[in-house]
Image (tube, rainbow, N blue to C red; front, side, top):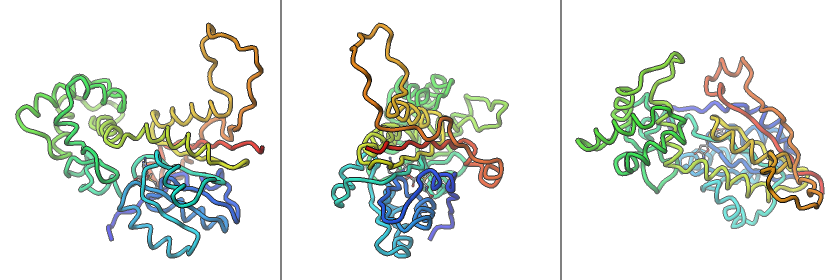
Length: 311
Ligand SMILES: C[S@@+](CC[C@H](N)C(=O)[O-])C[C@H]1O[C@@H](n2cnc3c(N)ncnc32)[C@H](O)[C@@H]1O
């Protein structure tokens, strides 16, 4: 048993907006340490399907599943594969779903997983098994691809300078550790007034690229929305602007609030179909000052909720 703990963020709020009810079936797409799962199961006598791509999270979940016999089913897999994973378990509709995106403290605080620039470890960053590690990526992609990754997924303004330094260094010696990579980034980016470590944005970018996190979110939202029963709710907690932008746009589109297409687009003359969903949260729900004090991870969290309209 590891000594790491994950303090769930916006957990009471997620349960509040999900509104679990007895006899209904829910999905927790990002099981992690099971904090949300436990809270949902305690809130109502419902059935919960939980999913995580990290085998370590699945293994940790066994004890929780045993504590809620017949009510908690945990499946290993990616949220981009929700249809197949649930279908193969005979589930083809959901009364609600929740996603608490990103990495857990179990992952980030465990140096051997290679997510952190604070603890030295192998440059891995994979949430699940298989696929390329961050070291594979860093040591092989072209300088311009690397700069694009850092810019697009880390919103890193110094992306070109960092990519250049990485490529220069790897021509001498390949990267194998997180400390090594962080040191090269810090050697070319000065800390700004915010006090944030200069390696923060690059590490976020690499993690997103290694795990195709943004592609998974888009796929998961689209698939889950199709599985929701009338009155069913979709609740998503995001931790940075790239995630939140995807959620916000998807929810706006589903609720018929997407920004108008080009004014040059042809007008069909047909009335727009009534949207199938309604936004429950016009503005994102954020953590209280008290929660942020207790748990600094809560600082950047944003919760949005959507409901399928009754038929
Ligand atoms: C922030 S943690 C969730 C914490 C959880 N709500 C709790 O209360 O303990 C996110 C979890 O989602 C998992 N995850 C992230 N992206 C995923 C994806 N695309 N498919 C499946 N699991 C994913 C991670 O492995 C991690 O365990």
